[in-house]
Length: 187
Ligand code: HEM
Ligand code: HEM
Image (tube, rainbow, N blue to C red):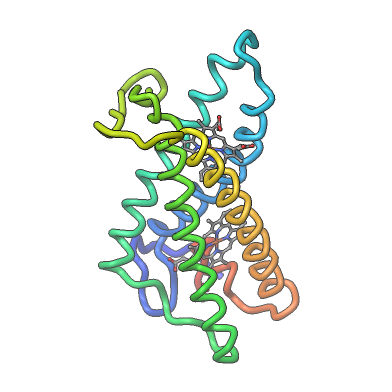
């Protein structure tokens, strides 16, 4: 196996552009989930109350930006063809990937709606302000908060199953599914 030198996907391999975006988003989600739980344990007088939510929201906004690039990229540069395996597995993987994108989108939007429910902008690392929508619904913070928690939990659970599937491909089926997502390709 050698490192793929291509930026874009081709019919057989993922280019390192989509690979870097995949792993950035994956790492961020794995970090954001416990950080979100931690936010819930903080009270107003805790010094971390001033920092941890800013970190959670700012990393989340960066995930949203990377996801936007990734989805636009994907519409122009399709992922490689599925590796030979039963049709049912190919369909299951496609559904799981589409669901991961959808759950991620809902988590990000609901996070934005919690944070901007009182009309205040989100500070991206205290550098840039992301403005709130000019309107809000009654109980927006609570409703968006509930959706955020439930959907983020489904997202992290599906991501765990997805990761187990990737490891099964690697260690049991011994195919190149995981290697492809690490920008490795056959010589
Ligand atoms: C994929 C990305 C994200 C994940 C996995 C995630 C996960 C979580 C989790 C698990 C919680 C704890 C919820 C609870 O226990 O009720 C939480 C809380 C929170 N998240 Fe996120 N989050 C993400 C992105 C965002 C974004 C983009 C924002 C805002 C811009 C955001 C804003 C918040 C806020 C304000 C809370 C506190 C909730 C509350 O006070 O009800 N999150 N997040
Ligand atoms: C934690 C959050 C994660 C999310 C949201 C996520 C999401 C995704 C998505 C949406 C795809 C489809 C890519 C596309 O074709 O557009 C994908 C592919 C892939 N992911 Fe993840 N992933 C995560 C974590 C992981 C982890 C931890 C592993 C490995 C242990 C992994 C291994 C793979 C592999 C190998 C592929 C390529 C699958 C194929 O070629 O059929 N992912 N991931």
